[in-house]
Length: 198
Length: 215
Ligand SMILES: [Zn+2]
Image (cartoon, rainbow over all chains, first blue to last red; front, side, top):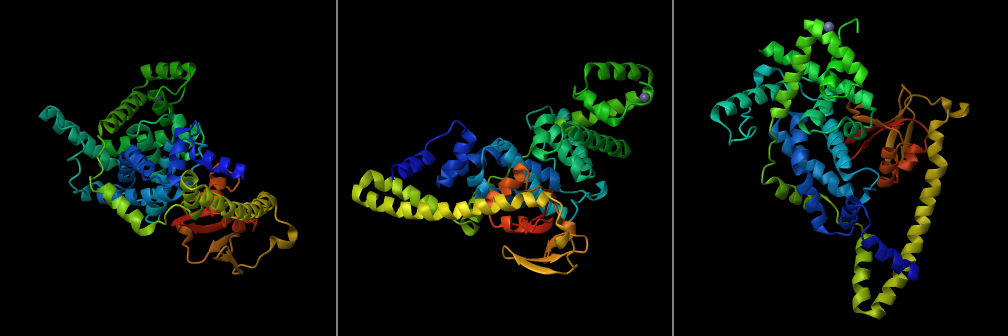
């Protein structure tokens, strides 16, 4: 009996792993735990989903579904990787399975008119800089959609999310050499698309 | 360096991922080769442009939408968790009730323990089979053979794997080795999958909307 009491109290006490504690709190029904996960990762998930789907409305749906999965599975997060890595994996797996069925749309440049760019740049800058930056980031955003998903993922993780090669390798569960080659192929494709369009 | 630099070398160079010797050789080549130099500058521009993209903020209504969807579709935390939680509250308030709770917890604990033990045993004895060559006796399964395992209807495909009925093979999003850490996480999350793994063959199944090839 003492063992059971010890076991129940051990389960609610905190470990030295804050990510694991968050999962434990979630498992015990503490709504603040999931709120914290939401506030930590919502922006990252939304932007990743946006870059993978290419559409803000779709990114919204994907983000909702991804959080649903996180809510369902967070209790079983085992702390073997960082929570951030786990969330990235859940996000990419979900995007792949949802978008994979349509082979991730890679749209031509011509049919784009979705008003993006409105929130893309920092509004506090000089109007001329702003216009230029808006133009450059709009162009690259559109070009990104013409990159194969497997290379796009790697480029987005590296150049938009700012992750290291090692972090990307852990998330994608591939070797660093593979990461290096995927990033290069994605970037080189972007270079070609941009050169063609200018 | 005698031939032109690959995109991979150039891209890795821009990320300072080359070892000193590689970087030096590349720099020497770049001094004399305008073609590679142009490609390098093109890649540099791509990176600069990518980094100029500002992140979007998720819509302010998104969190509410998430909470609503969870409330509509997700079950609350597990029964046992809630029971344990209730128990820890009782402990503080009423010693007799707490004793009673502990007795129930003990029964529940023994039950779940033996269940888990069985599951564990089951997993231990079956998972490694997957990585062995199938015994000759079961090597040939006729295409179209049907089987219901873990509440899933499986059909043996001509290509030699179990395919869950109603799944489009083209939708496979990734392959997962049961032996990998991701695989054991999946098994922990879906204990019933152990039965599929026990078949000792690759299987293409749908797990909550994800089409996964289990190896
Ligand atoms: Zn050259």
